[in-house]
Structures are given as structure tokens and as C-alpha cells.
Image (cartoon, rainbow, N blue to C red; front, side):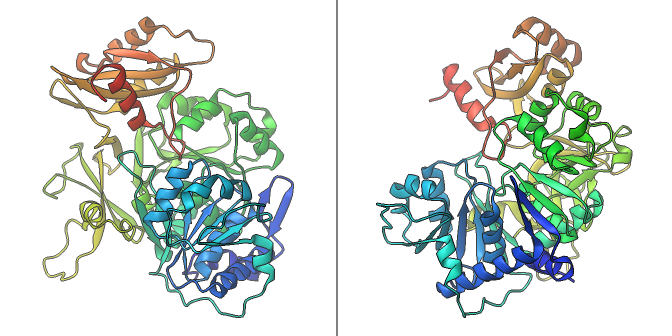
Length: 528
């Protein structure tokens, strides 16, 4: 049985080494070649003297070297830290410093852009660039070497021994509140997650998954782990425009596509030729609630593809999914627990909520992460003993207390209410932004929508609905406010609508609500 993350592609190479595992533009990589490269990188890391559990950061777009280095890092007994390629030098510096990265893999261009920031990373000892070492580069206190030279040198030192409870990765959250935190994941977390997701998506060897989300996002990385578990292939893509995704779907006969609501909103308005959906077997959503109107539109453009609506958090990889058979019977639901996980809905004192009573979602099982890197206080807040354990348990099982409010109906289906730090408190009411956004999307007048609470002297917070107009629609308040008044109680109707050409997104492609809140506070004179 596969127990370790790097064993996923290596075991597949032993069975069908000639099968294609990665596609990047016009290039193809088979499992045998990938496994050999993983071994080579692992030995190179050991040859550089990297100790067990030392961190290897990967700051690259999606390409073969990105995948090889991540899986090679864990084969070496080290920990990989995928850094979103969209991040700027100060953000990259924070990650490198926070977890004491020892080796950084990047491109020559990114290396030069980071030069000023790397001097503030005292634990960094090695820099590997995917091309030639750039002329005039100042290696500072770190040794810089080209990728090809590193792997060609040959290193006799064997990688460190690894077990499934060892650290495998540190994934940094998008930092919606304060600086990003590093979520520590074990081999067990990541392999169990891959097996669970592949089970309900019914992934198989002839699947071809399109990876458009960043690998620094657990949902994005899972395109690799689930594919490698079953021997499927992954098409690597860093897209600029939504229409580029549709082109690749057709060109590479993609069978599975994962996205977040803002991306789906862009895709839904594109022209979809029949060839783009001919092979598409399913599409998945996580990272935010899928508005019903958007889901209906996507089902029309992808009629043969099964929609899987999911809920997850980096601290537990994935928590729930809604079976396709229940999609129309349970509109708005995020489903039930994924295989090998259990979900509780609890009150502040930890007791179980009643039917349809809102409470905090608590996730228990082998997908629960190891905590936050170097942050005892935040770890103690979020990772706490699972509810309902017998008193005689001396060492309690730890669960993730998500901070998200959900409710569970009489059949055990869960419904997302809101994130604790996104809930709007107005006129004494706690208001879920998603309820307002759902009405905005259903009106057909908007393409993107985010409901934000801004400080108000009397109400506590007033509601601002930030939107972009739907294709062919004019940015006029009246019709949208009328729709809100028809469908929402008075205390939930936005006090103001702000029309924009686009909504800001964070590094994982989600709406950047924290940035919107800060901008609106400044514009209304209630913030700095």
C-alpha cells in the first residue's frame, strides 16, 4: 500500500513507466522519466547536505521542474514549500524567513528580482535556477547552481528515511487576516487526501486533469496527487485569460477540471465549442460557495460533465462533497463528509448542534494537518481535541476547529453559512455574505459579487455590495437593489452598491475580501 507522497508517481512508474504523467505545452513526460528525475533530485539534495525535515522552497510557474522538485524534496526526507509564482519579493521573503528555507528553486529572472529580499533570509544556503546562472548575480551568502548541473553531478549519498507521519509540505494560507501562516502537512495527510478525493471523483488511469490553480493551494496540488495515485496525467497550465483554458480543454482532451467561483464566473461567459467539453467527465468547485445561478449556467455549457461541489480548508485538505445524485435535491448544500473523515457541527461549548442549528464545523480524521509552522498560539486556537471523546482518553485526538459556521439538516447534509471573519454584523444580526451574493448572481445582472461589511456608527456595520456587471448589462443600481429587496429581509439589503471593472483576487484566485474591506473602510472614512 502506498504510504508516502513520493511513492505515488514512483509506484506508478514501476507498473506502467511508459504512461504519460505530465503535459506542458507541447512536451510530454512519462512516469519512468519522472520517477528517475525525482530520485536524482532527492540524491542531489542529500548531496548538498540537507538534513531531514529541512525546507525546500519552489518558486516557479507550472513546469516539469516544479513537480520533480516537490516530489524529490519529500523523497529526500525534506519538506517542500510551494510559493505562488504571483507573489512579490516581500511576500516571498516572509515565507522563506518564516520557515527557514534552506534551498530555493526558482528561475533566473525570479532570482534576480528576489536579490534584495534574499539577503534577509539567513538560513538560505542553496539556490537552484532552472536555466543558466545569470551573469552578475550576487549569490549573497548562498551558493547558486543551475538545475542541469545539479542533477548531472551525481550524488552517492542516499536520501533520509521517511515514514508517513513525517512532514511533507508547508502550504501558506492566503493571509486574509494578517501575514500568511504555514500549514504543516504530513505524508499521511496528503496521501489519505488523494485517496479520498480520487474515490468519490472515480479517477482512473485514462483521466487527464487540467491544473490551472497554483500548487501552493492544497486544492491545486491535489490535481497532482490524485492523478498520480491512479496513474492519470496532468496538463500543467498558468493561464492569462479564461479563453485559454477552454482552448487547452479541447486541445488536450481534458477529462477533469477544478476551479474556484471567480474562475468559474469568468469561464461561464466564454464561448464553449463542442470540442472543449467532448471529453470532460467532471468539474469541481471549492474555495467558496458556488452560486446556484452560476452552477446552472455551467451545467448548460458542460452538459455531460458531472459537477462536484466541495468544501475544504488547508488545515484539513478537503472536508465535504455533495454527491452528484443529490445536487438538485439539496440545492445550496456542501454535502457530507468525504471518505475517511467525520464532520461535527458544534456550539461554542463543544456540544452538538440540533437540526438546522448553526454552529462551527469541526473536522476529525487522518487529513487533519500537523498545525501551523512556528505558531503555537494559532495552532492552539485552531487545533483542539475532537468533540465527543471518552473521558478515559489520556492523549486526545486533535481536530480542526474551522471557524466556519454551517448547519446540518435532518439527513445530515451540511450548508455553509459563513466564515467567522467574514460574517457581517449589522443591526444586531449576523449576516452571511454568501446569501446576499447568491441573490445578486441570481438576478443575472452581475458577473462577480462580494458583500462586505464596513464600520457604521449606529448599525455596527453597513453592507456594501461590490460587483462587476454581467456581459451586456449596464452598471445601474436600481434593478439590482430591486432584486435584493424582493429576495432579502430589509436588514440584509445592501446600503450601497459599488460597481467595478474587476474584483481583486488573492493568490489562490478567491475574492480578496480583506483587501476590499480595507479599501471600502478608507473610501468611507472609517479606516486608515
